[in-house]
Length: 485
Image (cartoon, rainbow, N blue to C red; front, side, top):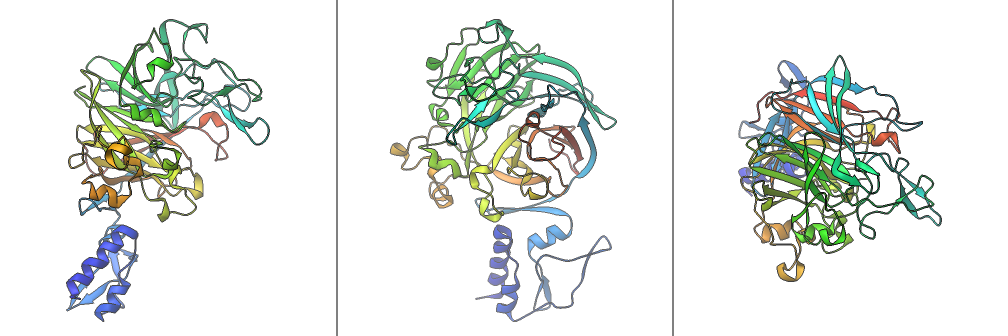
């Protein structure tokens, strides 16, 4: 084997699996012992040894990037390497609101967005469907409980200053009429359809309570400056809901076939999501939504792979991102987002790696929040990626049915994607929050201001079943050493 080939192969291994090139040094018969390295005058130790070949010193790309304070990402499908400067943590802010009840904390953070024209320290956020938990109903059967059955999902206007998150205003979600479950114009966070959605129970898990066809489990929030409205991504439908600034629901984008199962005369259901989205895993629905600055396109990302054709797909790495023309509310493209491979982490199941939010930078660039289920010292994956759609394959309507396509998208392995000419979106790390010791499990709100200030916030699930001692809501800001636009 030629020396150049040895180096290229070793570098590729380093990028894909974090393997050093010590083996290449042995093969070439050359070592680089005694070499020291520094970055800006500070001593650094590369994660892999250097190789001296014909008087030239070679070091794997990943080692160079890591020792100079850069993120290194390798794109197998596009055969490209991205080195990205790490951001600087500039601020931490905590929510200090009274508890909703004994043992139930107040929380925001299941989404986050900044409106153009607002001060840089003012944002909009939401909590999700309200306090809920799981209890053993007997025989080891867990049921979902809702201690506040009439909880109203709400949009919050928040401000950060002096280390605190303050709530400036609230916009409870409502219908232009009466919600039969709440008895008022306000909606609830209860599931929509019996037999399809997770069944809701009372606090003790003894009695099944009402379903609410207008109920929403809010996960993402986007603003359209073109008509001064919000769009919300909802886990139940999965759906995307159009909302006035005062919280009034206008319409709801749902999968084909959904509307026949739920009567929602006050909120028209637009069946423009492909029928395959009915195959969602419960509580892993429409997790993120974002809109281009010109109000022309909207993007929605699912939290996990669809159960297509069945729940064996819970460990699939393929997550769908769908693009809508907002003028028609019809999808115009669908892309594959490839989750990180769980085997590179410790004690992490593939199905527990999820997408939690997105930000639209422009029509071809998104920020995607990808995370694991761990908190504190156990956390291994809490990353914000810049995602490039420009070379990604539009798979809209092509791999929904195994009988027609041979395999569904979710059934495919990496080799299948390659064989079918499917390019997933390209990912580049913008923030690794594990490096900064972000203490919470659920980074669920992300936004970008001025192209270079990245803001993240966690969803504390109202302090129920939390994995950190404090289990509060905390917002962190980072300054990027470059501008995304």
